[in-house]
Image 1 (cartoon, rainbow, N blue to C red):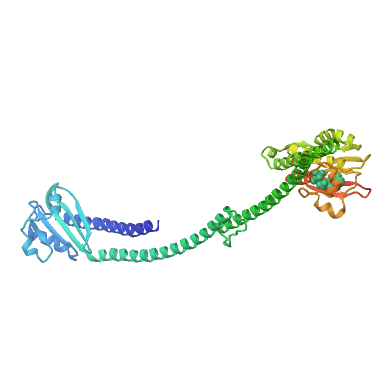
Image 2 (cartoon, rainbow, N blue to C red; image 1 turned 90 degrees about the vertical axis):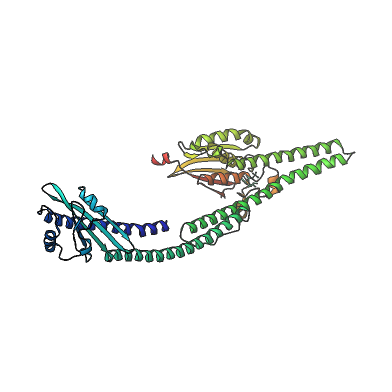
Length: 454
Ligand code: ADP
């Protein structure tokens, strides 16, 4: 691009000024020639003596060569020193022949450091051509001007080209060095080295790309940490019941004389462990579903309706555990979310409140809206959780007291599902022990936009 501009900068002004010079030469020389021609037209026949007299009055400065010919193309006047030789001779210039044929002729060229111009026009007397005037000019001053313009432009172009080349090379070097470091960083992250960071403090687009890649790497590192912990926790959780099953079945196989009652007991335990395995895998599935495409679909959901359904489903469990369920559900508590996620939240909280309750205990569910938040409170009359352990109950696979919880069916994933689901919709969940005994789980969601407007 720069080269193109420089070439245009060199060619265009020179060509333009040369054309302007030719144009001005053309008009001035043709004007001069027509002045001579009109003065000579008073003569009937062009003859050396008479023409000399007329030309002596007009051609006093002798700036250009002037030749006057008669109709037969013979020179009758020539203002150069060669005049004595040329007068009477035939004019050889092509322009003279063209002028005698009735044309105004001009020709100019810039060559060998000079502008040489020729102009010729016919001399008319009473409507007929009686001769021709021919002018010739050899101008070195104007040519030198154009030449110096050309040389100056060339010098400026050379300096510009060298400067542009140096700046281009420097910029290219700097950009490619930074790009290479960004690429190395990206390749490192792509190869699984999530602790790789790009050190580029630029404030331009490359700097922005670097900081975005670093943010991405932070996120990947975080996700990778969570994934590794999750896989190790999950495999540990699956390994424990599997080890128990293997141990129990080995004992049965290796003890030929085992009595029927013990075998039954062992098989019953195997069944319990298998159930536990099934529960863990089902909960794990539930966790992954939270991020699935299907759960991305959101709608305005009446939380009261979802809560009533969940309570109905848990009624059988409540009867089994001798726990009384009650609820106070305000109308039109609308949350913009996926209904399945909301169901999962309420179901897990109420199921826990029943599971970890005492015989003859109570569970109360309260739903209401305060300003722009929808609040859900699950109270129970169980044993609660020791205060120092309250901070961990939302962790994956965490169970407060394995020996105590062990009596209850659970995987330690229920509350972490609740936590993830609530956070997904910008809500919060808090657990606390009630003064009067038992636990309180308090969930708050931002109310759906439509509700806010009312
Ligand atoms: P689990 O499958 O074991 O119920 P959760 O993640 O749902 O797993 O709960 C984690 C632990 O928190 C439980 O094992 C239990 O010890 C405790 N917990 C949860 N809800 C209650 C509750 N309402 N009352 C007392 N303890 C509870």
